[in-house]
Image (cartoon, rainbow, N blue to C red; front, side, top):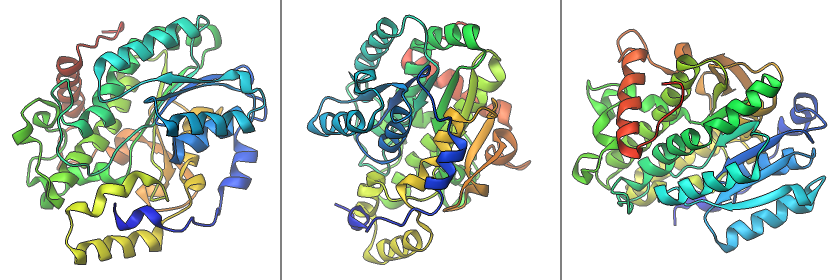
Length: 348
């Protein structure tokens, strides 16, 4: 286990006051479906909205951790009977489709917000039963599929209330795709990472793992921008947490030299914020009445910490004039994601 896994919890700086003023006190009419809620930002998000009376569907693999998280959210919920577990293994497309079917059955009136929160970082180069890199499938492909499968629920709610949303969760690592140290001059979406040839998705060294992670996090950005530009009925937003104390980095130092491990730990410890503060981005995207489609919320300019600032996805996170054009990134990711998952959106 990485050195980062046992860092002391950071003091909450902004979350307590921010969530009281920014998140509506009564969310009893809202329904949220959230992936990756056994710990970290997903768990805190669920606790926050459930405390305000929302209906919450927690999408996790069946496990003791999932049961414990469900109990924690129910314990603090305004109405514990409105908090549910749905089995969903993002490493298995058939499980994702089954989870979507359960959501469709459970939400006949529609879904207000889908939060694609789950993610892994710098895992070994392993292959899922569907044939893809586990990191690419968990962080992007399965969320692409899940979103397509429940799109009808989001459109139904948008027709009723005028406000349904998809929220994706990226990170500052999305900007690695523009760094020659990792990708040379092939900047932006590189389709081979989303295909089944495991020899072409990076190895188990530090650079290979960061390449995979960077591609997945940029995919979260591009997918959000794609949804915001391809249709206008459902809002599409993306958040980033800065650097915060979650178990996400448990595998980060496995592939590093002791020197690199110390350097990253020193950098994280200096700029890291509490997990609660790191959750403000997805809460802003999902809950702020003023949040609009095509927006990025998180610490300003991909800073390590700070309260959530609003910016435009395209202008902030899609690269510079020297990079792959945004419309090229969108079409490359869209086509390779459809091919990998078989997913179709009704607005195409």
